[in-house]
Length: 471
Image: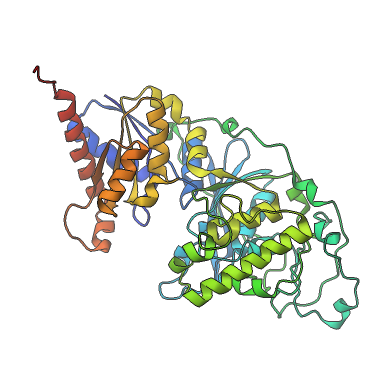
């Protein structure tokens, strides 16, 4: 039997490639002669960069950035053989970087994600693929844009007040100058020193570029990939000012205008594709603050404050940049970072799982397979909407291939099972079969996953022996 494993990571315990390894162990207990192909998959969330680098033979770069709460953290991104950069915002601005009990979504910033982009630009990368799942932030991308500029003075000293002020709709549209510097007047923290006013440069339209053919990344089986090379961790913006207070969600309420005249000029010839696994708009009951704010520690009052701030940001982007993006699918992803990347960096949003499947050559490998196995750490109602299991099942079904799924746990009972089957998953197996503390389940994840895969394969073997009875 030929089997294709295309699974996501089991967060907190196993990466995509490790999970596939233990699924393979379970398969071989039942069918020692099985031919197994592996594609590590991620849907735009945590692990996307590592999965892409593993699948396509890239190397990893380590860089020191400022985490969501401003502390130094070591982030990782990948550079593929063709010079493209792949990165996860969670590596720099993710919820896992915030200590338990210390969440403060109002103060969390995407600044470190902007530093990751700068690091890739400094390496000469002009095509960037950015996964934006797993965020700790709700700042609409202000911190990211701040890092892509030089300064964001707030309560400006007298010398700066005397300088000519840019007018919304004119200087606000400018995107290129010889040095970094993006400004959000009125929203800026108060502790920064004065900086000379930038002169307007090219218009916002400079960021509208021909779209790349994502399939040009090629496809390399993870089993055939060479081990990842890993670099050391330099400062992401070495030589640039880095002690500035970070813009965060709490600063959205004071935002008065948008001036992108000092944005990094290299963005004008850089293609940024955002890999996203959700389609939420920026604001409202289905937007970033109300849907994802609670998991980042926001209470009802903070959710309302952040939603109002994002609505204000959207209005100013429309007024000053001429971009109406608040309702774009995925604008609300990562606390509005999807919106910010589109508005401030000219990025486009892609369905993360489809991009990954295309890049890894899923269709070609699936056509040769008798069975496709997918999975992730937790199978729930979200798994059927844009997540890896649903994406794999949809593509497998289109090719007429049976798809099975293994999950660390299955939440939502019959509703989840029905949604996954409707998405194309024909068989589902959970790793945990008896009550068990989460910490124990994560510690034992390798063995539990192998056991679950073995049970699944016994069911498959039984099915292949079934013969219809003659009435």
